[in-house]
Length: 337
Image (cartoon, rainbow, N blue to C red; front, top):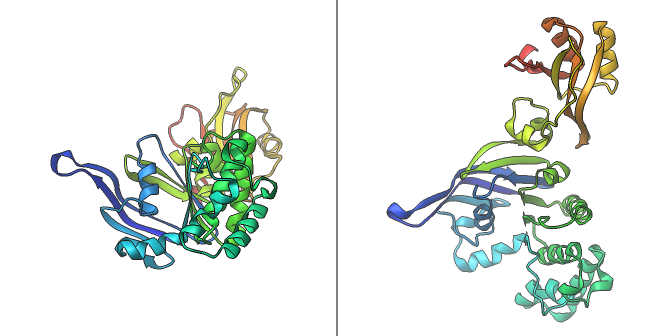
């Protein structure tokens, strides 16, 4: 696992200094994919450099499997870095090296024997589905294939932590889906802790177990992905699954915005809502999907019933947080329970 404690990074000195990361705290458990999102300039790239210790934190700690890497000497750190594999945005491959030679690079650097290097490279190429591409150069591979070579190289030294720094940025949707599926498989098979830094919200929905939003060097919100998506008061949850424009309701109907709570919501909740109220209910728009074995999402409905208390009570009984359009407060399940 990896634990970040009070991580702070300041560039410059005196009046010229800039605080880029301010006392960050989070942890990534074994077999967990923890995503960090945020706008440009939030500090994501600096965070990646500090976690891999390519940049020394100004203060705070990077702890991997119980060892504080921030306190190590440069010589000790060179050894400790083997526990952290890094996948870069632009694959980071050497143009004049074949796929196999790129994967072999960290093994050669450590002086691993040729026979052991060949065996390990072959094993990784096979795992990445690239055995037939071993002697191809980067320009002869697709974007997704190049990224797979980069992942194989990151795994060459059998790390316990994988750092993905915008690894799917610039890939087409098919290649992105392939890389995400691969990372999830590797997480499960190798008990990896994966820190997934990205600006792509759609990718977070597909890959993350937990997520944090970084803004101006601060973590402004974090939590389990499903919990954030199930909380109508969560800005991060809303940004991960933004509301879309909905149809206009019929004259006389009241518009309600509902969010799936943590309790199971019946698939026929619109029909049940109409039956229990004895009123017409029209679905105006919705975004609902399965995430980590849970159904999450939100919907907008028009209801021919003006009784706030009755409608909210029925929606609550169906496992839905609710807010009537025009009202400020959201009626949440846990607030009433």
